[in-house]
Image 1 (cartoon, rainbow, N blue to C red):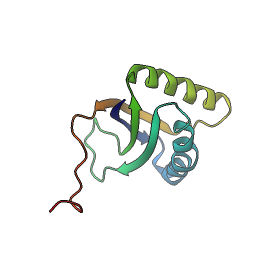
Image 2: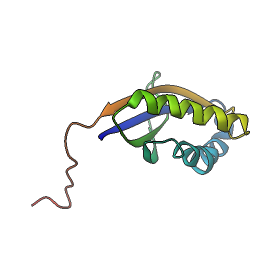
Image 3: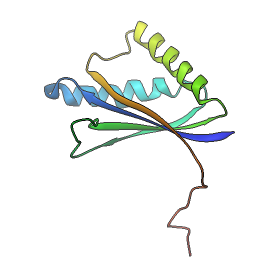
Image 4: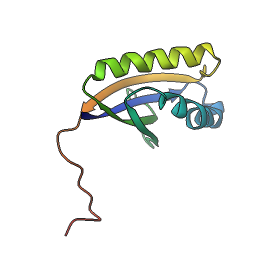
Length: 113
């Protein structure tokens, strides 16, 4: 299997509800996304000084697949189904979705001589 990194940049459409947005993303959306076949893990980061074209937040997902297009299609199905179940937030603005195929093994400075 190939290892991928899926990066999804987002903004909150209402800055006065940023805490609500982050609570939803962390406690509802991340676990929902992890139900998608091939997505192994997810974590979020905040860009403290985003440019105009960048999202303030990025969710990074580790993916294990030979068919990233299928994972993206499955992710669309998962999020659509969850939205129909009332598990989507009107606060989310998706800025970009990018996928990257891993081309080196992971190096760890804590284990390097």
